[in-house]
Image 1 (tube, rainbow, N blue to C red):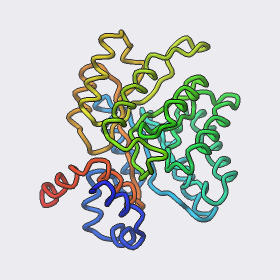
Image 2: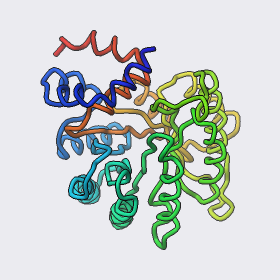
Image 3: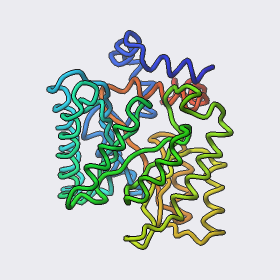
Image 4: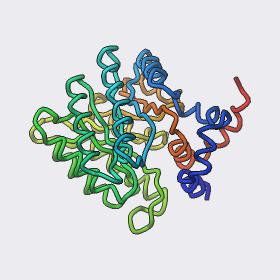
Length: 313
């Protein structure tokens, strides 16, 4: 019930407008959002790097309705890529297609993302294209495939797959065969039973099956695994993967665990100490409300955490 409530709230424009302008809203979001500016996000990435943790930077925003807004959003990513290169950060970027104009001009969105991936290649970095709701799933994967197939951009762009969707098993094989890097998550959008597994048990079971496949698949041309990210804070799933690595002899360098900024910092550090690669997703910017609500939807226990810590310094 709480999950459905927070997902519904994530699209409430009146509450979004109030929250993003409210000092209370900004204080609540600060646990999961690194700040409002590029500089704050870069500082958060540098701090993580000092702890041996990689970063993925996300300038928050989605569903823009005009080209000027889309290009403004893209410019922030170009600033990030320049800073990643000049500061020598262990970081990449993560972008939503609707923030680049996908809703009203898919060709514009593809052009903008192509320029971004070309910049990432020059900066020796990487662009992750986030996954949104199912109406965009196929279009997102096709866009990533077209850019990935371009000369000199192999391995510079990747996609996100969600284990709660029935189609994700086939999509996993499809992307792995092309050498496209995958971030596997459970999924944070409201989807009907025609698209998604209805129960957490089934979603988790599919996640475990797919993460095992991703880390043992050997690409026939690369002669090595396709480096993928396992995005989860679920300790049971993480423990399952740790045991799988030990039993199957999977190299720890063949994949990375991925987690969200502000969530389970203790677990992030402990995995690094055990020799695993860890990357933290760092969101920032003034358009934080939809992201924040989806974090509460994913893990309603976060509501209690926020309530306990709101009045602490």
